Image 1 (spheres, rainbow, N blue to C red):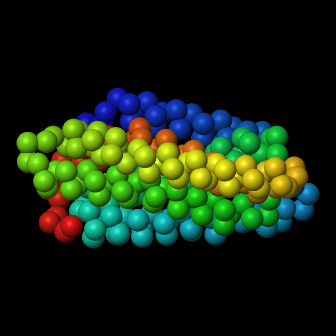
Image 2: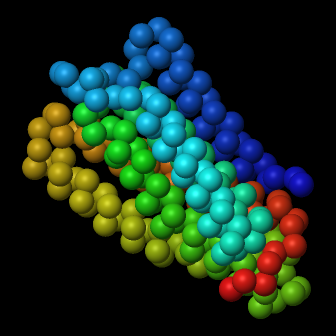
Amino acid sequence: MRIHKTALNTIIISTLVALLALALGLFGQGMKFSLGAEAAMAWAPLLLSILAALAVSFLFGWVRYGLDGGLSLAIAVLHDQLLSLAMCSIYSLAFGLSAYTVPLLVAGLAFTYLFTVPLLRDARARMHGNSSLTRAQAAEMAVKSTRPLKLLVVLLSALVLLAFAVGGNVHMYGSLLPLLSGLIAAALSSCLITPHVWAAFAIKASRRK
């Protein structure tokens, strides 16, 4: 298995962001909350939620799109959740996070599924419909085919988040950060990581449609 350089570079950048957030935390500068909101932050439920999401995503992807689909979806979920958490930690230096940070971080999985599942379905369908295509070609075509959906989701989500930001106050910004981070992370992985990871898994796909 050989992963495309683009995916590796993106993963490296995401890792550097995560390391920066970790370094800030070690120096007492990470995960800043609005007054009193830190009491609602519990790491155990968040980590358990991420692990549960990984397991469910892998099983769903495996059953629906084959082992390669399950692995690709699980990697996307792990990347998006960890990057979203890291970005929230960095953003919180300017805007304190809210008491709803944990459920909103997990809610960011909706963006991962909205962007990644159609991509995997499209790439898999192209491989079944044209035996002359390579996995890399099928993945690239799937990225182009699903781009309008991604742009629509990003636009509508950005408008909704902007409406909340304009209609709220500085405390509202902290509530929006987890969703904004989830949107950015999912858009990044679905364009630059998942298609290349899926293409790298030379696993015989199941015949489930």
